Structure formats: C-alpha cells, structure tokens
Amino acid sequence: MNGGSTPAGRAVAVHFVCVVALAAGGWISRHVCSSGLVSEPARVLRLLVVIESPVVIIAYSLVRSDKERTSFLKAVGRGFLGLPLGALLNAFGAIVLGAPFWIEYLKRTINWSLLMSLFTFVPAVCVFGYSRKDWLRILALAKMARVVDYMVSLPAHGAVIGAWFGAWPMPLDWERPWQEWPICVTYGAVLGYVVGVLASLSFILCQKVHKKED
Image: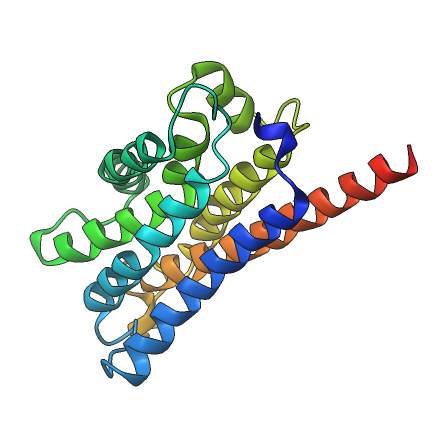
C-alpha cells in the first residue's frame, strides 16, 4: 500500500487528533497549570510539545508512504529522531531571520523550535522517511497527487507562513508583552498550521469528489 491509497477518512482522523491534541495542550496549560503563553511562554510551549509529540508521530506513522519496506515502529523511530533535527533547522532559520540569540531566550527558542518541528519536519519524516525526491516535491508543492502529500505539505507551509506573519509586530514599539519572542510568532504559527490543515482537508475532499465523478 502506498501513500496514494490513504483513505480520505484516515486523513481527516489524523488531522483531527493532531489539532485536538494541540487544543488540549492549550487548555491544560491554562486551566490545569494556570500558565499562559504570554506570561510563561517556555512552560506552555514545552507542555504543547510533550502532548503533541506522540500524537503527531504515531498518527503520521500510520499513513507512511512506504509500508512495504518500513514498519510502523521504524516510522515512529524516524519521527522521534527527526524531532530534534527539525528543531535545529527551525531554530537556525529563526535566528538567521532575526530571532534573539541571548541566553535568556534559550528555553523559549528550544521549545518553540520543537513545536515547529512537529508542524513541519516530523510529519514528513514519518511519512516519507529521507526520500530526497519526495522532500523536494513536497517543499516545491509540485505534483501533489496523493492524499499524504496534502496532509504533510499544506499544514507545514501554513505554519511557516503563519510564523513569518506573526513575527511582524515584534520590532514595533507598542511595548506589549505579547510582542516578546516567540509569543506572537507562536500564535501566527498555530493559526497558520490550522489554516493549512483546513486547506489540506479541502483539497483531499475535493479530490475524492472528482474521483467519484470520474
């Protein structure tokens, strides 16, 4: 079975559990831990990563594209190994684009980068492994024909674009607490991720309708 045979219903389920886990992390941080992203960003981001990590890795490992050659456990292992690697790439990109590199922001940057890795890098690693061909195709949004292509690519692009837009208020002199790194960037990334999930579902369902008509 390849990625093209992934049922639309399974794609909906994967997106649903990932978004619910994210929402659950936000609810627990506020109502159980009494922490807010503005007041304690490092703690909230760490909690989101702890809750979201197993959900994303397990869910996307179930829809891996190379099921004949890769076991579920191997895909899960790829996901856990890809989590810190993706975090390094996201942290490097953020710092290059102007994120603060001071020691007081280190915990925030680490936890934010891990969360971004769950949005961007980990799903691709679980589904495609380290296939250069698939990665280039997904990054370029080229030849998106399979269900898993939309599942991996659109939420990832949405999170990155959302984070970029979310960074815009940071240099402004409004002196609001939510302008601190990486609070507004996180809000933007989460919003962009959710928009990407909705876009992914729309493309998948439209593709299903077209196939029925054919």
